[in-house]
Image (cartoon, rainbow, N blue to C red; front, side, top):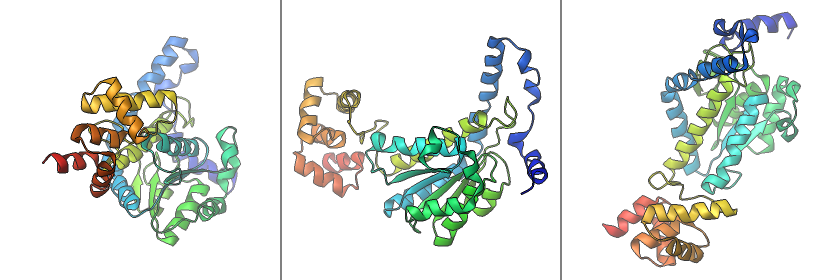
Length: 307
């Protein structure tokens, strides 16, 4: 693509426009610069709210994939790729899922997480190859993340994903984007021009982070990873999380710290099992069977025992 054609494409993107509210930001004091940033940031959740129906449709597809043993795969370049990798990496400690269940792919590979390898995004074949390397199947969901909606790496990945029958989702911050036209579902919050023209790590990045949070959190809740609003599948892998596990048991059951520790020791820090045992009086093996029969849903297992 010639430079002139690329310039012409960028001129059409909402995310690349100049923000009339910040034309004189370089003349402001530190306090006023920060106030302008904060003012613009406040518009992001409103833009995300408008696309909740599309987010919900994507969550339903992700839940269906998880229930069939499929995976959620994020792919993007630059900031978009880093946000996808971040969200994927938070799922194992938060919900005790295997790292292979939610995967983040970034153009340029792991090195691109710490240093800019922005040229990697220009190759659609890299997007295809990245999905081939993880053995993409029709059971998976692929979310292509690109603020512009025209990143070749993401386009290549989405086209390949469609060819194998995987569900595809486009997450961009421009309406009627290229990737929106490729994917089965399109999530396109329009947050408008950035305070610094084209610096899409700002409002656009914030919108992406909010939506990625929603995709994984809602999906995990839907497959039984919470009880009430407690993270009952938390992986107690360090001292803070061990303490959090005890506190969750206490919050869910009203038991003492000593009792929470006693039952967690019995279950090997399995919070969900510990709560079920504490509320119902079940032994550990009976509780395991009850949870299995309830499909891993703690509330359902408790209701079946106490009905």
